[in-house]
Amino acid sequence: MKQYLNTLYITTQESYLAKDGECVAVHQGGTLKGKIPLHTLGGLVLFGQISCSPFLLGHCAENRVTVSWLTENGRFLASMHGPTHGNVLLRREQYRMADNPEAAANIARSLAIGKIANCRTVLLRTARERPHPELDAACARLASGMARLQAGLPLDVVRGIEGEAAHAYFSAFPLLITNADPAFRFSGRNRRPPLDAVNCLLSFLYTLLAHDICSSLETCGLDPAVGFLHRDRPGRPSLALDMMEEFRPYLADRLACTLVNRGQVKPKGFRKTESGAVVMDEPTRKDVIVAWQERKREEVEHPFLRERMPIGLVLYTQGRLLARHVRGELEAYPPFVIR
Figure 1 (tube, one colour):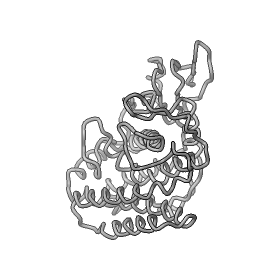
Figure 2: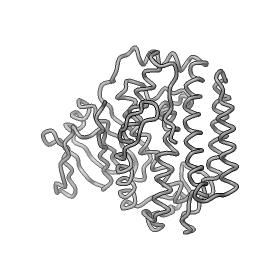
Figure 3: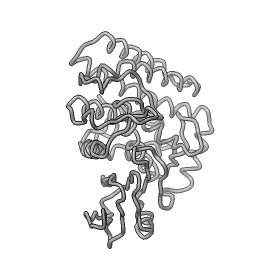
Figure 4: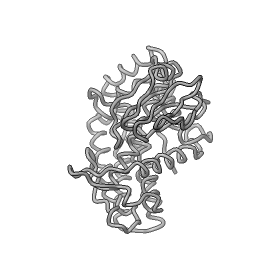
């Protein structure tokens, strides 16, 4: 089994990263703040005005450490990978399956089932603690959506059911927020830009999740840009977005609710810009990143493999299972479904 590796997030502006032997040296204001052995890292995520030495970037590429650049507020800009992993035959088969309507629809169906099942489980857990008719109605709509996802459905129909399920889920999402502060009122999903604190938090966590899944897919030899559920678009990691769907409710959404409900993020940590977008300040981003890293270290039993592993390693495991399906070793892709 692959070893779970950490991701190093740098949010302090004007930081400078350099290679120091086999370590990443972090300099801030001309002062060395610390060294992190590169072999313990799976990726670097740099927010805003962060500089890297060419020697460090080359060393990261040689050691399969993904480097991603984001704006200070968490919008993805670019990433750097080393040589393509895996063999060309896997990617060629991935492209053939993406171009095959039936094969693509079957994988998209599995992904949609995983997403809808996990959304329903998240709502059911809340319903057990705080019963509400809207939660029951949303769960019923999600169950209906899963029942409609029969084998042989065209891809557009699968996408339509997945979209309906997302609408049902987010219609009940406000009931997951127990923090009574008006600053955390959630009235629906919005993005590009997020218009309230909860959407800002969700978008930020989705960005972190996308980075980790992209790195996992690259490690497994798959092309993150060629997906099945999401349509191809220049510059969009469609396959990473596909695989994010089953993890959004379990990882990102639950963590967002926990941070808000427990008061681990404060209203003062969010501000509205002149354009109407809501952004996080640097201390809040750091707190969220720490919580994200801690969440990924928690262990869970994989429902298909029946092995215990850190949640962060589940992302890689799902990429590996998808690669096995693409190679013809598994009859279908088994989504990660929580209980």
